[in-house]
Image (cartoon, rainbow, N blue to C red; front, side, top):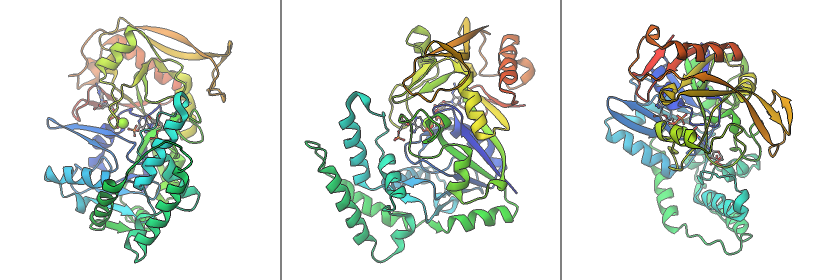
Length: 421
Ligand code: GDP
Ligand code: IMO
Ligand code: MG
């Protein structure tokens, strides 16, 4: 069996959680491969709403293993709170979740370092979710990090203290930045004990065993390709590889094991945090997208920046990921618009271009094509044949430009508001 990958093609929050939940009943294994509690994946079903941060979005489906890969960074406090909430819904979370020993731990001081670094940058800040993601990945690549498997060793507390002391030394550089982790540290240590009650496994062996046993795996990306540490708008990115290749590294599977790559995009764009956003709107249309799309961060509650669909950026991320099928989300948010715009090219520093520029600070002016709005409520449509002609024209154009079929159309947050073509 192969590993199919679901990933965001824009700046995150494309609707990955919803789609993984929809697809999860056909996959016995769902696996997160990167990121951490900076992610907020929303699921709506049976009148309930749930936001997942660390646990994969297949957890509400019976009989699926929800695997947290080595590429993920885990904050035990957030993980515990999330699992207890899931358990309270009657879901046997311990039976459904397995964690790779090689996943790294977010310490309370990682969060403090994140906050201190952002505070020191003033207006130039990344706009991080302040979950300690950057500092934790820095310790990972700097070969100083603590991993989940370490919690089972006898000198874990000693190693924790050593890493904390190193962080405290670094924090001395941030003059005037005050912090107190006393309470958080107690909670963290208690959450470490909680973590021990989970199935902690040799992730790469486990993952390859699933595949050898003929179990189909669905890898769930976090963030989006435009936030990738290599290919996103650096430095306004996250600290992990959010592209398809990241699923191999973050799970321990070879590239030859990758099957379908499902690229998810919204019918418009959003971004939360700092950094370039060529099609960003600052007018009433932008406000309408935010209001109708309920564009507020699932993790931080921050209002998301909004703008029109950006095809040059989508072509770029489709190229990076080898997307085999597209999934279009939230077209229903456009239901009220008279005119819908799509960026088909850029003017970069005054010159026409179809490339996402290297220079994060370049002036990018989108070149737009306009479409007539369908002005119809799409949220209860279940059959493709009922879709209005203007909408069909819109998606046909997108498919032709991107040269990849749109396999799923999502027309509302609920599991049921999904058309599989
Ligand atoms: P993720 O991080 O990619 O999982 O996405 P988020 O959960 O952060 O943000 C997507 C938001 O859009 C959530 O509030 C979803 O409930 C909602 N959503 C998902 N799909 C649709 C859709 O097709 N239409 C509408 N209106 N909302 C959707
Ligand atoms: P999901 O999985 C949207 C953004 C932050 C910030 C930058 C770096 O829900 O799509 P970090 O905390 O990683 O150091 O922040 O990345 N960011 C996200 N934006 N969705 C996410 O996750 C994000 N995770 C991080 O806003 O700009
Ligand atoms: Mg999100």
